[in-house]
Length: 458
Ligand code: GTP
Ligand code: MG
Ligand code: NA
Image 1 (cartoon, rainbow, N blue to C red):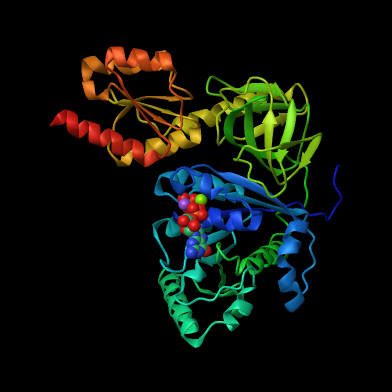
Image 2 (cartoon, helix red, strand yellow; image 1 turned 45 degrees about the vertical axis):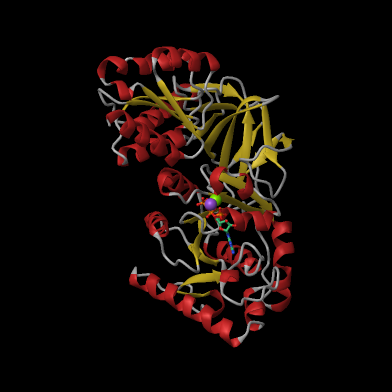
């Protein structure tokens, strides 16, 4: 065994909630980064992962520890998974929530419960995942006087009576709406019975107020209720989040290592679009601590990595790896065949949502995760799909789409989400009369296509 009995691994915490409630901004505040500012349209369209070493959390909860209880820190750190709140990305919220030991449900104080708040609660209830609510954007209360990074009770005490009344009214609205959904919630400082009440921590991602409380609550919740889940064991659990080409590294996969240990040189088996991929780990990389895995940065190379961690793996033959599928390690050569069969089943289930129409558009996306999201969105928009593909748009894709010129001309169209168009492919498309629409935001694609269809049919 590589681990000491009784030792705890880093837990995984997922951040869920309705679009624009401030999930990414909260993480940015804790990281001192601006990931949200770099997102197309300011919306998250991928799962992210950031590792916080315990020292950085200790630093941010110091103010609180002086004032309140002393919590002993036993975990090495915390891996936080960011998810999209936009309605199109149900699959990524589901994936994020399936990866985590606990969650932060972010609610906008001014809006209360919204559609994806409810969806997120259903996902959490399904897996009995404990969670804490971040009641975010308290700084938007009229007349709020911010005390940067202050614990909530400290900043609240400094507000005028008018501001306190405004806050209490909003807070009470939220409590009532949760009660209507069958959830007992109360402010964390007043929660005497965590078995009955879900704690709600008022926060601001802009001023940092309440963030010390939120982090402290996560640590306490983990150590109190999740001991069994995070007692170090060696069995490997890892999931591919994204497949990316990185200059100098070639095709890499971003992976969440939930349990166990990954080592340089390990033989890995992952699901590929054209069958299982078996390869050796060439480099095992992580971003710097407190940096987002989905943002390109300076990577640190490791001999081995202990869960939980967001890891970038560089290896040969990963070009067609499928996001969202598990990654296995074959410790003995005899295990390879069994694992290859196992991952073949994953692709079948990933593509099972796709109903091929006789007449329909072709759809292309950067990852299986975003493809699933796009297909779900097109389905709800009643756009039929005749073919799907992953990766850049090439001439062969144009040829495939051109088949529709004979059947139903407006469907001789490729909808590309987050993909490049090869210039030769574009030239051929122009020649043949195949339309290519690309966008960095999923619903822009369907908007573009709907507009085109309406123009054509008029
Ligand atoms: P998705 O990932 O797209 O679902 O959104 P999100 O939940 O990650 O929200 P995001 O971090 O993108 O923030 C949405 C908007 O709310 C941005 O304009 C933020 O600047 C703003 N915002 C987030 N948190 C706060 C807050 O605490 N106070 C105020 N005033 N604005 C906030
Ligand atoms: Mg976000
Ligand atoms: Na957003």
